[in-house]
Amino acid sequence: MKALYVRLVRALEAPLRVLGVLSLLQRRAPRSRTATWLVSLLAIHDVDGLGRLDVPWWTFDSADRVETWLREHPGARVFEWGSGASTLWLAARSGSVHSVEHHAGWAQVLAPRLPAHVDLRIVEPVTTDAPLVASAKPGHDRMDFADYVAAIDDVPGEFDLVVIDGRAREACLARAVERVAPGGVIVFDNVDRRRYVDAIDTALATAGDRLTMTMTRGLTPALPYPTRTALLHSSPPGVA
Image 1 (cartoon, rainbow, N blue to C red):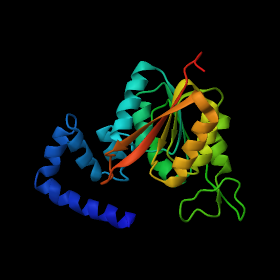
Image 2: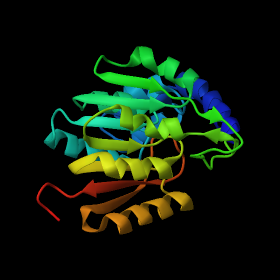
Image 3: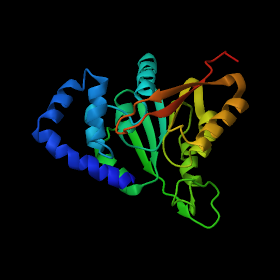
């Protein structure tokens, strides 16, 4: 279904361009959230298209909140599981970005577009009958993402912002809570899935007052339906 949707969207782009509708929306996009969203629908799986719109693939509300937070924390240090439009967006607003990608082909497309202060690593899953860290995504049942999740351990220090938007997100969240700096933020995307909600609930219960959540729901670039992105806030220094 997803592939069919992408083909349909691609087919609509040419007539919209000929009719002048696309150029009109593109002119309005910098000032209009609705126009930005409509143009982004034609840019699904198009890193250059989303890059021109300067949007990450999270809810618009969460992106606005994170952008405000980054302005208040210049030079922020970022770690990201799952690369793409968000990597470009974060690079324009952060001091450094460490991004881990499980899909080598996608990373090779993205890499030439990244500035020097972005470190993009490819950590592919290992095929095995007994994965240590599994992904519940269909078709990934014999893939072990243990090295992918553990990639954060190869980068020393704490991170001001951690983004979870790739594979094995439940395991990534457990690692992120350990590595986010006091006062930092964890972005957990696509929280509509039950297993992700359960993972967040567990993290909040375990962390107690050290972690709070803001849930955002609404329009998301490149998607024709509303989704949810969670922002998990680590308590600032000195706050229990």
